[in-house]
Image (cartoon, rainbow, N blue to C red; front, side, top):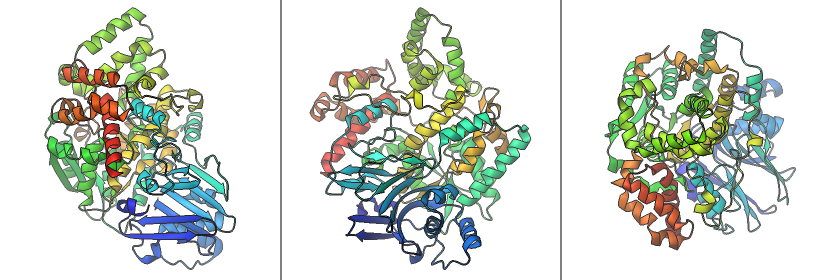
Length: 626
């Protein structure tokens, strides 16, 4: 099981067994802090009570050491790893309190020898993955599914309800996984099992929903400049903590607001030029490398750009099943894998701007959904039908060409697909919440497409469990941070990075930054038709606005075009009637109909077809391995 995830930790390995209690812990180590054998895992606490297998980083572990020493006197530290610090905190205060005072990202397994209690825990925002579940009488757990599959007790049964969720969202949301009986542990929770206990419910030690609710009720009453100063301080502290490393460190720089502000704050705290990395594309509409290079020149970083053509990206496609371990269908996974490989050539740790959009209001939907609903709510049904036909009657590529001259003023890029999706869903939208959900949905009637599936309840579909927020945009942002961020964005980044033994860190996801942002009034996040206004103000203290202001692009690829051209034969093989019927997961006519519409150009359905393709590719790989 440990060997299956050697890429996550190529530097060291360890196994600890307790035959009496039927427990085994295995660990693969990517050495970041304390490269000596003193950081070896699984690690025992100083008093011998606890055994810990820990993946991640505790950024404030040096402060925690000082706190422990001030309370209990000198401690005979064996080394200077953060794992040893965390164990000492658990020893002194118990797991929940230790996690409460820790700043970091992690997944861990802890055995308490004295109480015969086993615990699994995951960081607050879900940066590090943790799968677990009972299979044939054994509790299996690990960072990736490929480790669990190696156990002799593992049952290889696809969860068709989870497959339907993949088609709906392009990812499989927590707590589900592609395999029946295996769950993802929810972020910010601890699962506790006493010996011989089979059932347990994860218990939160930190709740983003509660943080958001309290923030709305007790928003900061300060001026804009004061807020910008406080944001810069809290974010600079987060960046400083995440720059702690005993190995080479750099940053992923796209040239957008989020990555630029992280890089700028790194550079102000670094004695040498920060190593920054970006990839560029030959397709002009998808290339941001020039913007990144301009920011890098201004900040005087040590910048590396890798220019790619279509074949460079397409050659990565066959690696997706092994890299992502369960079918995953955010197509920006392809360039993400390439930029991680580029960064790993020079550094072992890279900071990123992930989380800035969800925390500070950066996605276009936060601006556009309220405007669209403000108009739609007054349109009679016939007018909506006419508008739907108008939006879908013009191809996505034509919309892109029509909108191109106005892209900067509209602050939009690639509008065609968004207009098509809106047109297809107009008649089903009866509220702003409906509009939000439909913007997150690719396939609507998934039960008719995935044979033998039923609609599973998720954090998005169960509106009774949504955060109790009055402001609908705050509600969208919090739901994105609870779902899309950990299950799509952070999955994409973690697997792509760890696949090449690179550790990524996201200062925006420091819980102190998140808690500060939750108390900001909405007009400091979104105002004047622009998102992230306070964050931009911090950035413009370091980088001229002229280098940043442009339509939001995202980290996309020309998927619609590639599926009609470079990837057509590959896709046709996976979506052929014979292949679909043989595998038996999808309704053949439903999938073939959408594929033909896409090829004919009557609709651009790349993002809708991609989850089907990623599952078919993944399923094919399962047969090849076994």
